[in-house]
Length: 157
Image (cartoon, rainbow, N blue to C red):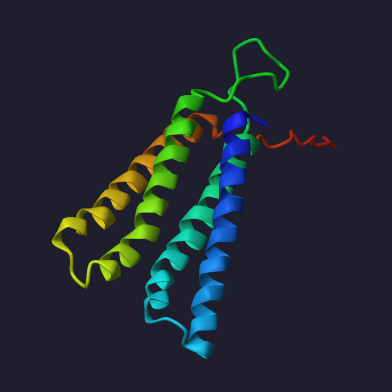
């Protein structure tokens, strides 16, 4: 397993723990009503679990599990996985976007409402996620190969 896949899976599990903690706090606040600002964690909870955990876990496993590049004259599966710097870029951009979205709503709440200085955070998170998507596709797409159908033998009568 390439090191970038290990890091992406570990970060996904870290985001999983953070996401369920945020969700647990939000749910506990619904029943106990201990702090009004806890509801601002709901948006971060959604982005952390959907993008930070689910998307990143899937991307990390895909970088590892996709077929390796085929080199002419090489019969074994000993090819490489392409430019893994693109996978690292995907990992960094994905995590930075998740962190921005997780922090945005609580920071706005702490600022007392609509804070013009923080309006850039969701837009930057979206741009980072587009960069992550492009880097992931650029790394994985050359490794996509069609399934080779087995030859069928026909018997002539």
